[in-house]
Image 1 (spheres, rainbow, N blue to C red):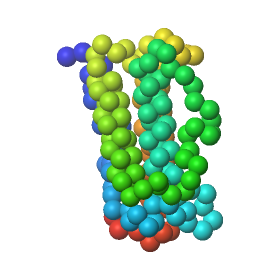
Image 2: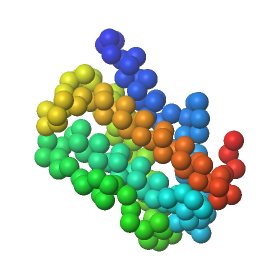
Image 3: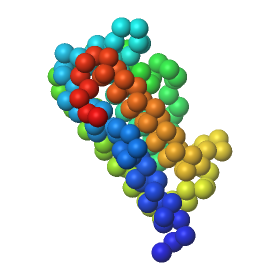
Image 4: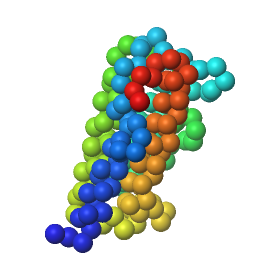
Length: 160
């Protein structure tokens, strides 16, 4: 057993956290297509925009961790979908599937003992792998909370 194994295990669980609050999987389950592109009154984002933003940001951070030829995206334009509504009825499920695949890839990166979590990412600017894993988890938690609120305001949140 490596000294970092307990940390790696905890971080892997943290990426899919659902113990202290609703997790990603609960927050995206059962959103009717008619409401996916509807921002609630007074709020700037629809469920679709929040989901896509979470997917895009996680994919970007994963790419940064794995790709020595990583190219920075433009903030905020490249991180938010321009339209509040998904382009079609399959888009929601495709985005959810992509998010889950990238989350699993982040969990695998976190669990890989060949990756020194405390090491700086070679092509970064002082960022460590640990920082990026924590950033993904923190970012997801923040926006999952927003998605739950948006769903409550739209009347389509039944989990509790």
